[in-house]
Amino acid sequence: MSIDADTLFNALAHPLRLRALLLLQQEGELCVCELTHALGVSQPMISRHLAQLRQAGVVSDRRRGLWVYYRLHDALPEWAQQVLTATSEGIAGQGIYAADRAALAAMPDRPEIACCG
Image: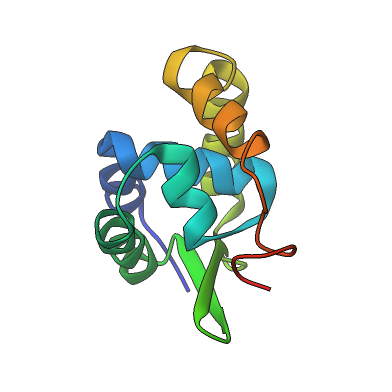
């Protein structure tokens, strides 16, 4: 798989996709229910954005029963991973990005325990 700069930066251009990507970059893999909770959006909204990221080759997904888990695509080029890492390190502790991480950390009954397990 090869992703070009236009595709990656287009994926990062929408605030919700950027927030989701930063959480995935930091956490490794998240269930859709975790993303909806952390980002405070509906399941259809986050699923639409995750589908765009999947089609662009930025994330991959796996099903486990009724639940879908997302992570950064294993074939994401090193330069693209470096962009996400630098972005995460630069802004993760600020504003909405810090609030997203806090909301995820405070989520009751995380997937392995209840909602997706």
